[in-house]
Image 1 (tube, rainbow, N blue to C red):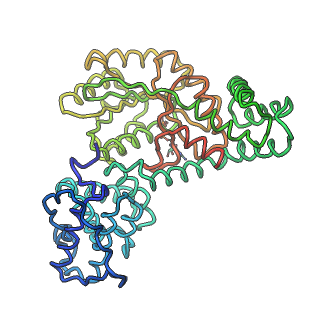
Image 2: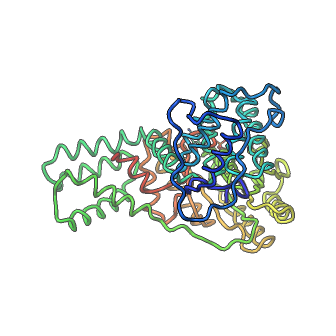
Image 3: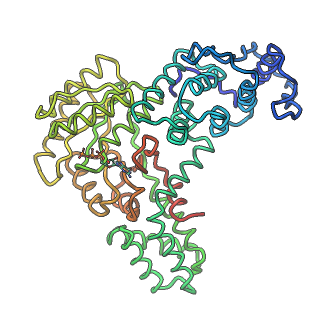
Length: 476
Ligand SMILES: Nc1nc2c(ncn2[C@@H]2O[C@H](COP(=O)(O)OP(=O)(O)OP(=O)(O)O)[C@@H](O)[C@H]2O)c(=O)[nH]1
């Protein structure tokens, strides 16, 4: 489900829009030619299937709708509308193209941008109130973040549209993610990929000295001793089965092995709303930011989110979380610093149930995991949630900081044993050469890494895909 309760996915090649485009042009006496003067792209010959009722061609919302000056839209400006309609008609959803058309001639946030976004949603037949809600939320977000110029927010806007229109898996978005992942892994690639290429070039065959050198590379990239041994064992097996000792093929074997390792099964549990997610992890790993990013995604996917400040250890942590909740338009619940975290959890679950939230993100104290009482506290929170809303917390997500390398592995072990962890989110992958920790965590724990943090912006939390990761790490 996306942000909108319904949209027409015209990119399934539907003549409706062709008809709408023709009517649109006729009503406005627009030239047969496209703005660039080429002959109009003729709609594909109508196929036999019955033409569903015509869709009223979207007309640019009156400027008054969006609080813009009441100047009439000059005829030239309609060219972008025509381009957008024509682009929407193509058989494939190309968000980057639509956005380029929407942003043509727009250099900053303002009435012209709102008018264009509303036109796009109208062309997709999104309910008007929801379209306005999307624009209003984005406008408020820009104010909060003090973003004004298009380059400051274009990427976030594209990400928001990808979530709202359920196009995150669309080709452009996937390519953008791969690029972001590759950029984020730049330092790790230096450590692993470049050195493996050197290893392959300096050996005429895969022999004992090859494996010894590989072990050193993996340990240097913070895969850790145990995990490195395990990985090398699996690679020896794979090479043996392939019946070759040609170093030139090693990268292919390594990529296949990594994809296999990352295929950790995701736990799917039946959930009666609200879904209660417990966020755990030590201080400074990026938990608060990650909660905000998760809330942002869920909101853009049409879910109502409540964030609860279960980390009552520091007033600053509560305030920071409240600021983020406001920015992403999520609900917020706290009982202030010093309150009993279990009481916060209990009352937050009660609020989420009684006010019909879809998702409750429950922040918990991040004090150093060596303090045993923290583990007791987390177990008490789990019990309390289960009493209030049977089956909850439905997921416990451990947030670890990739830059802490082996320490992250320790945390995964300790929290996993103490309170049970269902998923791992690895933050700050963009800032480390220790990306090898991803392999270590996947090898040591059958825990799925569901998201990775690639920066501080909202769009910098992306679903983790082992295949993409292996490709970004090792290059094509
Ligand atoms: N580069 C980068 N920075 C990140 C990422 N995730 C979080 N950060 C930054 O890391 C710092 C700590 O993030 P927080 O979310 O406050 O961490 P926390 O775990 O809540 O810390 P406490 O509030 O002390 O518990 C902030 O400056 C974040 O912007 C990431 O994926 N990449």
